[in-house]
Length: 122
Length: 109
Image (tube, rainbow over all chains, first blue to last red; front, side, top):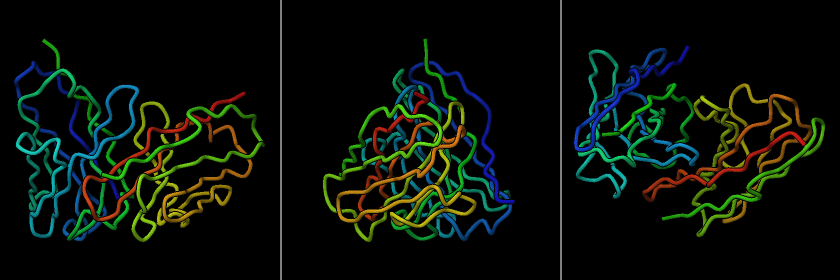
């Protein structure tokens, strides 16, 4: 079955970086892009950006531009999201979700990873 | 940026009752690229409805979506115990950023 399995929880200090992985299985990796969505405690989801697993194109939400990088490893069908210069308000659960192959828009996020808790605290 | 406003914030109902959730967009959602998700504590969002009115795979027919333009509705015809959760609307049209509503909590009365 289609699955997205994310890496485990992370605890980081302010100013550090975190890299979260999302390993896919059960479908053709390059047929779907991956979105990253985060959810702060008690808040609604927030879209961070998207990467095409077909050609590596990315589209990041303006709020995260300059601080986020999304990459793929086709040999392991895994997508990575790195967030730099962490602040306390980056504390959230980070989800990967399957989406469009060539564009972030117009394609629903139909399968989600289980989430990775990132805690930023001094 | 398309802002999605959900109402009410909380809906207190009994099992068997009908739930009607609203999602209003600050501008028209292209091609009705509007989805609804259900989320339970400690879990990822689960896709219920996409394209404003199409049920996702495996979703019971008591869930239905309607609307277009700026006004959308999720209806749960008869609440089952497992339906008590938080529901989010989400627009996935082509202009970034993709956005989510603030959520409606459906709680047991």
